[in-house]
Structures are given as structure tokens and as C-alpha cells.
Length: 309
Image 1 (tube, one colour):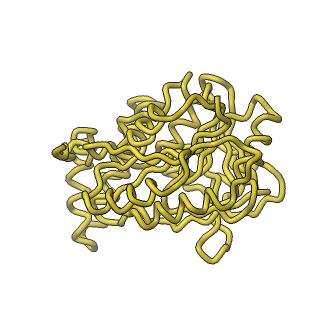
Image 2 (cartoon, rainbow, N blue to C red; image 1 turned 135 degrees about the vertical axis):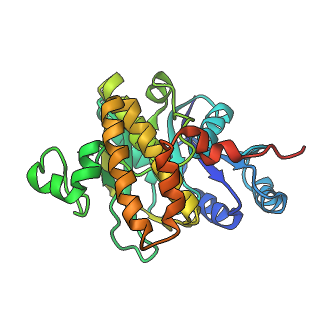
């Protein structure tokens, strides 16, 4: 059994993926036994070949597998898990990140080994200029969506720690950003891994909530290590992405908080985006999806096609 299996998804951004892989290798010493599993999520053939050529020249512990259909964030990571060697920990790493400190994997490994109640942890996220970026967040709940994060942090700071504060010591949070999640393999497997109904967004909130509910294990920020995240580098923003965010959010609310909470939030968004559409015409498309209940059947997941062999 190896110590860590690093899983990285590529989707038409092979240059970013190559840089991410190289940074993992550059800042990881021999003290940790690890592998890098690259899962190409049905990229264009030229992008896949560009990445495959790079991996073929890399050490043997780096390997690549190609899916013939874009399975999204959770689905892609689950395919990566199936290709991984038996390991103690999984490191789910976005392809638009860079390691910037030595021993990142080893330090996270040792931190997790120190406390069985930790299920998931993450280094401190930085932007491309190495400035602070918020890494912790609060569970997606009706309260968070309606009252907003800042208000919750003011009225109950013990339950909702400040997301915009730089911490010098590890801190427990509801969840850490999905751009870098270091998690116990045994716990991940017990809860069933990522919910592949979620094509994009809120996968980390859902996973962390199931870790807490099922196993009593929490998520932690480990600020002694950090990494750069080119936020948005792997996913271009568009109205379709905005729609996908709302579909995922409402699915998550229904799953963890029930029908009444789902209906309350849905009505709120229907009203909100009706009026915003009067100013921003592109929001009409989102409003129509919300009017239909924002079902999973309208997710981008249902629009993917299988690539030929």
C-alpha cells in the first residue's frame, strides 16, 4: 500500500495539467511514497495527446487514463480512484494548481496521522501572486444562501469561522475548497466517495457533510502548507455554468435538508432571477430552468456524448 494517490482531472487544459504534475514532483521528496493518476475527462484528442506525451516521459509513478465521456468533477475523480493503487490517502488536486512548498504531501500525511477525527484537510490557498485566498467555507444550507456568509460569521463566529482571515494554526471548518482535498482513503470509501449526480460544484460540501454525519470526521485547514490556485483556470464562466451551479445547489439542499428547504430556496431564486432578468437578459435562461425546478435532467451531465474509440 502506498501513502498517497494524487488524482488530477484534465479537460482540454493540458498545459495547466502538465504544470500541476511537474509542481507536485518538484516539491515532493522521497519521504512519501506516492503516485499521480491523471484522468482525462474526454478532452479533444489533440489536448489528450499533448498530455499523454508528457506523462509517457514522466517517471513510472505518473500514469494517465482517458474517459470517453466527460463525467464531471466527481465522476472524473471516482474514475481516478478506480485506477489508483491501494493507498492510505487520496489527494484530489485540481489541474489549475501549483505546489509551492517542499514536503506538502508529507506534512499533510503527518497532520492526518496525528488525529483520527480529521477526515479531510487542505493547505492554504493562494492566488497566482501568492496572496491570500479563502480556503474554508460553510455548508450549503438555506441559512447560508438567504442570510449570506458574512452575517452568519458575525452572529455565530464559533460555528462560522471567518473565511477571509489568515490562520496561523490548523482550524476546523465545515469544508475546504475542492481545488485541493487531502482525505483518508478508508473514510472516503466508507461514505461512497463523491456523489456523481453532481456534475460540477458543491461536491466538496456534500462529501464533507457525509464525512461528518456518517463518520464524525471533520475538515481542517492546515495553513503551514500552501498552494497556488489559478481560480477559474479550468472552468470558463458562462450562463450555462451559472445554471449548473444552481442545479447542483438545489439538489444538495434537497438531499441534506429536505423538500421544504428545497422549495423555500427555489421560490427565492425564481423571484430573484425574474427581477434580475429584467436588467440582465442573459439571466432569463437561468430563470426558466429555475421555473422548471432546476432538475438534474437539465444538468450539463445529460448533454455529454461518448467519444469514438
